[in-house]
Length: 163
Image (cartoon, rainbow, N blue to C red; front, side, top):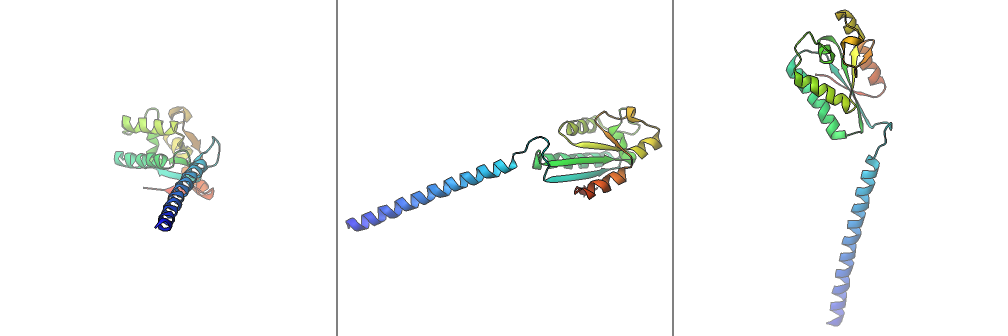
């Protein structure tokens, strides 16, 4: 009977030890996963996205900007996002839009820019409207041709999202 008890006690001790080992291994794995997620400012991101934004419709504005926000929430600082704005979508970047843009949209665009989303304004669209850099928000970057901007970003590995 004593040998059975010793054998059972040894087996239970071994099982408890294995559980502790598995728990420690899982903890180490969790630490290494979070360590690989740590990024420093200026480090390249694993995910790069360019959104096409070229419509004046308010539902379209909400949908695209919501998607941009969701990508930020999903990937935190491990995503680079560019929203290339041209055509009738350009009004979201105007200081004084000549088409309807809700205050909510204007605030969302500003907030996304503060979180690191880049907004590229098509120079051709600005020119066709008689606008200059003074007519758009200061955080927007003017690119010569919006469609070319999208293509060039894709050539650099950005995924293209269009509505």
